[in-house]
Image (cartoon, rainbow over all chains, first blue to last red; front, side, top):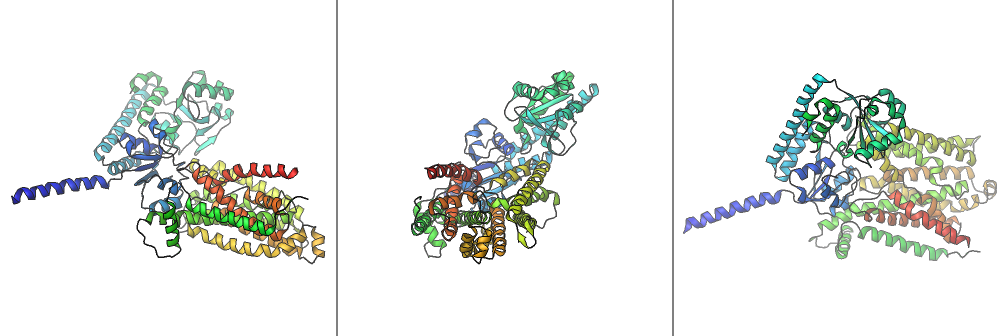
Length: 293
Length: 345
């Protein structure tokens, strides 16, 4: 009689303890970072999100959640009104006094790196996995990300044996008008390099160029990240607003590629490998078939 | 003769309005607290011993978020309106606003230097880093105003017209310097700079509040003592001098008070336009140009108006927040136009 009772008690204790562990994981999440929100979704944590910032646009379902505004202008009471257990964001999140107020209210605040670096991504994924109780899946996704990036690099080496790296420019614009050129130190620069492009712009950050200066750089390929138009529309708008570009090699040879501008903010996101494949395919047309995902 | 509101009625009305603004600012927010909890938490904050059962959340939101924010709003609104009166009195021009002597553009320049340059500088001690922006904005406002004042002086006399032109020139100069910093800024700092220029009461804390409260108190006590002299100045400088007013020292005081007050307000909450220009106008339309009424009434009206604007700023898009500068202009400007049109008939 004694023994079954003890066994029962032990079982009950075990059940209780696993339940306690699950309960300790934060259940209500607010995310203030586009790439972080994407990773949370990819790790199956989408239903835990109760609010996201304005940079969280992917997947589409996130846009239906309450918006906490721009990641640098968060409002303490606004976020507290969502009764979150956890606020995640990149090191760009702020302002700092608001984060202090949120911490004081007993909400856990976790800050992630926004650097466009693989090491930062690994650390971020590991931490997210831990917070979601999905360590295994996070490790898997990180491995997959590395694998896909490495695969692109291998294929690039083969492609570069046949064709030398094209000179490229990344233009960030609004319906084609007055585009900013992505220079060194930007996420766009990293993206171009990873896709085997040689960024012709060497300045720091995003800067305005005159059309003449653009044409003088004579890029082989122009990548357009347009905030209000996408695809062919973005290309057409750019050519319409900047007729001077028509003389450049990229336009003559019709090598203009459109890129989703949301890929350029808030660190490395899960959609990146596919984008790199697509860009690399455009940069190395002879090897395009090999870059098909 | 237009109908004017009796000062007594005006003060009672404005005081009630101010109390209402304070109460709403404390009671409303994106987090909906039951009215009773707000009251009990408020009493606890005042030191009344009440059992704390289940009040932690209410007390924290009231004490750490809404109360500092309300105090900041009151102080910023009050000093902006007071400085507006001082500047309109000094320049004897209803279009004058505190920006005219360069304090706002100087503060913006200081802020741009802090926001853009701070990231290059690096080696700032950690305890000072959060205050760098405020200190630079304050110093910039004070510095440019001092320069404007200096340029307006000749042979021991301050020429108001020269000062006005110097203010315009230095504002343009500071504006182009801010433009240069904007150009040099990277994406993230650019966003910070843009939002700073729109002002916000977000993230108010006691540590940042007290310097502004001290300045507000000093200016609010000092300026009304000069109400009679400001009234005399309305007649013209030489007339005021004949009436026994020390015109030179009055000008110096007005410029100094404005630089100090607006500098402190801008350092604490960023650039908030409209209040300094329009609140004195509103009060003048209601109560006439007597500075003995105008100064204290503008103080009350400025504080209340800013609190109401802040309520809109934090509730309209909750849980996100609007910059308050957008709201003050959006509500205030049409209201002002309405009063102007009504006053014409």
